[in-house]
Length: 136
Length: 136
DNA sequence: CTATTTGCAAACCCTTTGCAAAAAT
DNA sequence: ATTTTTGCAAAGGGTTTGCAAATAG
Image (cartoon, rainbow over all chains, first blue to last red; front, side, top):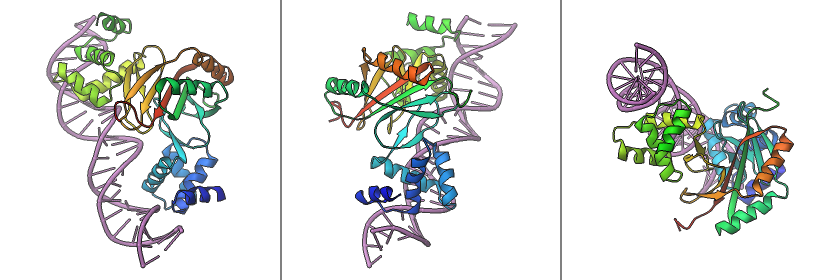
């Protein structure tokens, strides 16, 4: 909680309860869709509007505090941005699991960077499985 | 052209001029957005409707003949599906470059598969650079 | 006190759908 | 002849916008 206040202050963003709730919810619940995020936030702030959640998500995205996960086929999901990791998404239920990027991958990323001649700002890896333990 | 007819026949899809044009256009132009794809197809088929392009894109996606590229921030783009490759996307102009998946990556994929305990059906790797040669 | 943020409703994409006519096999 | 596909227009869903009132710093 304290940490979130600091993250916002560093970026000159006002720490409104709604905005803090976006960060807190993303910290507690993995990869919600916008709808899920909105419902969770409403539990603490019943009068929050969907537009406000969208605005905050966009602001926090621009500041690099949260990330959007685009999965082929299913809905966009949101994630607190910590260190890069792979998203393992289930095609059947849309559930997402995180997957650490251990060695191997950094090396691969450097390789792409060298060949591209540009610094890679961000890398999104989405692996899709047909079904997962949760839904089958 | 001949190849496309066969690909459709194998899947019992009717070879309409509009559908062939989707494949042909994706074969000739790299990664168009839906709008670009539609404009290109209209050059050959002025009376084609956007809905038809969407329907064909969906059908061909389901059959695994084409793939959708979801890039964080910019518009969805479409690609003929050949072998997997990495998409290097420019955050400034949305342009996409292909990047081969040489060794290294397959190994990495097997590693994820082993840890997930599930077969990976598809893997999407999108690397984002801030600007590219085309737009700067 | 000033600048930002909120909530509401309307506007705005992009994408899908229903249906009758047209085309493919 | 049968089944799929087309084109149109309307509907749908998710996201953004404009603005006045509320809130943070």
